[in-house]
Image (cartoon, rainbow over all chains, first blue to last red; front, side, top):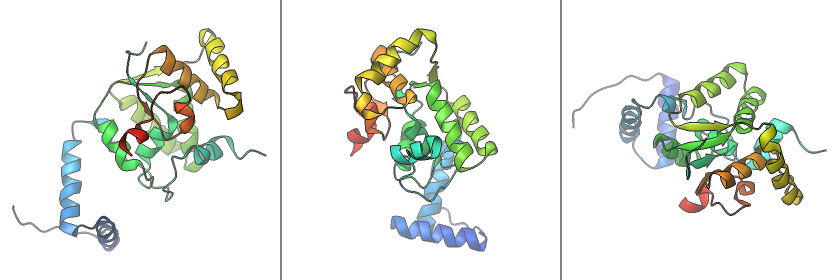
Length: 75
Length: 138
């Protein structure tokens, strides 16, 4: 492996560190995985939309939540 | 006309793919990366677009349409006069489930095209026996 150095702003660093910790991996491994994913998706233009929003809701794709957003709650 | 055995994509699959916070995001990210032949309903696209409009804004809704346009092998089936009877029959058959028109159209499309796997987190899309992809991996 080739050793290199990158600079992140404070917020990016904090969020990256937190996300890596949640996944049980080091910050370096997190960055390596992100780079691998980005390179493997390079010839797939539609993949740039993966995770284009972050709603904060882990149940975002549940049917009831989607229907509530689109059609509103049943009265 | 969709190719037979394409996977059907429901609104929930699109949302899980675009929303990094969703618990199924990783699964659908991997699935969409495969560029498999897919089929969906124009009503599903309308639902996805409305989801972005209501939850975010018109700019994000436009980006959703750009994503749909960029998908390499997605067939979008329209609901027109010719399909209304079949879709109404599905809605009537499952009237106790309060299906949306998009769900009923999706079930009709899956039947017509002999779809073997549905990309959805919504159990309604499994009413006719087509397995949901989340059941396959869990």
